[in-house]
Image 1: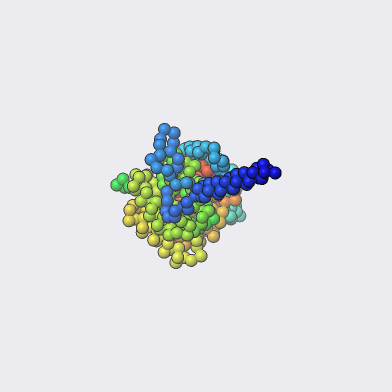
Image 2 (image 1 turned 60 degrees about the vertical axis):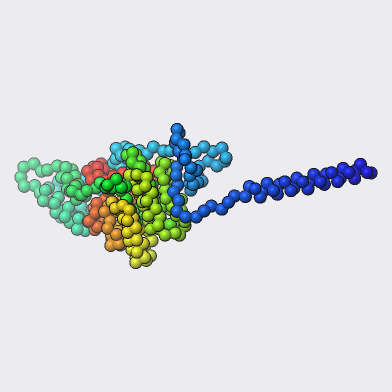
Length: 384
């Protein structure tokens, strides 16, 4: 009986000691809370480099990174070159917008261009969102050049191509100013309503610049949408671009200031700043964008203000464009979603309305489905 008693006591003592050890271990493993404030998401060092200090943990989309303690760091992507993008631009446009050019050519190739034919040409152009004034100007030019006054009639396709290129604009400066003066970075402010593809556009522009071997910093100044900040962080991580971000709901101007400061301090070529796109309160938006621009220019000049427009919204997009052009000095337009249901005439109309050129176009959901806009390539794609 005594032996059994000693055994029971020994088991009880071992159990108590084991439980105490587990509790102590749990307390040691408890992590310290993260600190708040503006931070820079630094990509992991490439092979052959060493990090001087541990970078903050990047905010990435869980869907793009394998989980688990043994998961490897993501491999940096190499974006497509501009020449490759332009080839795909022409192919995509010819598939999605070719109906406009073919319809016009079919009408202009008739043996007799009577009033009914010219009315049909006008209707075709208006349906493509070219706009009333540009349509009337184009039809007048076509009528003048295709009027047969003896001799051989001109080639309708060649005439249409020349007039469409003139209409889209050949004298506009479509270069995006991405570098600054005096050794400072170029600062590109990207504005537009939420839903137009603004944050995605910032990420895609970053890829174009990386393909051109430029160094880039992204500023996530749309602090009111946590999803936008995380999305931008993912874009940056994929191509090794640093992203400056702040606390959710924080001051957007503060984030923009820190992003430009980081770009200046580190000799970066270009700083791209994503901004909020709420249109519910025009005065509030004006104050916010004005403040962002003022604090940025304490360190470096804003070299470009790009307005992102969804090409599928038609007249609504033009109304939004006018509001933003009243708030901030827009220098160029990025048209997204020009493939699919978008009508190519919006290019002409938006340029007429705002007096600034379309500089970039988006033609799909792919990471490299954005390219510099070229008037001749655009018209050739329309005509097939």
